[in-house]
Image (cartoon, rainbow, N blue to C red; front, side, top):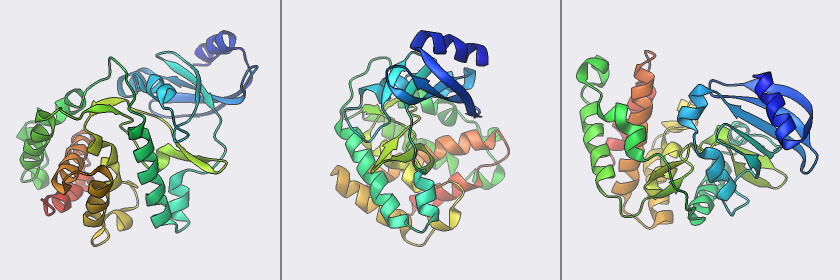
Length: 272
């Protein structure tokens, strides 16, 4: 991977390289650009190219301070603004749960307002293909009663494409970072889908803060707030949240997990 980094160092005139970390989808390097100063180089691996293909192009087109600034990019890598602040998850862990929710709601609103036009985006159908084609034998016994209902709801969500637009597709508290006085979204999945889907991660995240996620009345309050912000019916918001949770359930089943998204679906179904 360092060989790839060196290629981009020459291509984009970068210096002072340091490998900052690695995820299942990418490698990160701090560096200095001759033109832009301190920056972050992100290079996708094969997994990243599957899940984040098109994400750099989408981030580069947002006309808002609510997304990280992209200086240079191609399909595999991006040179982007160095964000020096904490993640929104850290803000939540400091006890600022309501403030964090308002921040994520506002960032989501701003990104949707940008109305980015971008061809070649993967669609919600593409993202949900494995979830919708999932057979009973691939579903744990404890989820068999819920998955078919969620699949039917997801089919209904995809039946109406009248308001679909380019979405970040992966907004959650780990993908929102503070920079100065502003909060900015990173790591776009890039997806063509209904606007309500952009809010869907609110219902299932922060992933490992279950006492917050399943707090009594939280999902209903969220659904009301999102529907008011979007000007749409609560059913549309909840249906998109269920569709999103089904996606995570299917991918979690593959590694012997999935109780968390299934529990989310069960609670969301009570709101329909």
